[in-house]
Amino acid sequence: MLVGVQGGEPITTSLLADAVAMRIESSGRVVIRAAATDFMSRLGVDYSFLWAALLMPFRAGESFALVGSRADGDVLFDPRWTSAPADAVLVVDGPHLDHPELPAVWNYLLPVHDVDDGSSSVRAAAQQAATPATPR
Image 1 (spheres, helix red, strand yellow):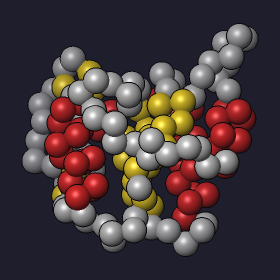
Image 2 (cartoon, rainbow, N blue to C red; image 1 turned 180 degrees about the vertical axis):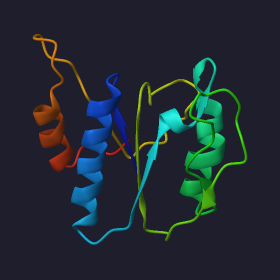
Image 3 (tube, rainbow, N blue to C red; image 1 turned 90 degrees about the vertical axis):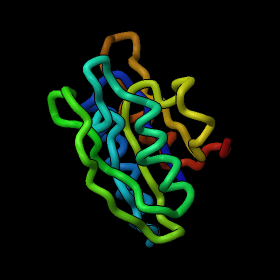
Image 4 (cartoon, rainbow, N blue to C red; image 1 turned 90 degrees about the horizontal axis):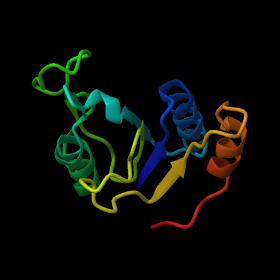
């Protein structure tokens, strides 16, 4: 299963993804956490690399990369490869996880929205995360 937590504010999105992962783990499932921002190029998230190195192999039950770029986004390096049980859940946070370069891969895609006062609506997103959405 693939769960995406999509939002523009990295800290809020990451915290919500961590909370979703902990909730799923509490049900006894193995959870793998990743961040789309770990697949950066100088131009931002490299969505085709995210798909090829993490999402597609995870979905196929093959070894996958959790980190694919240097912290400065300068150059992609030899990723850190790992594997997971067939019933594991991958929770990924990041911006634009509905990007056209990513096929409709998510079982659940949870958006983190800003509310009118400019603060992130973590409570609303967390409530949505606690209630299963309709899978894609």
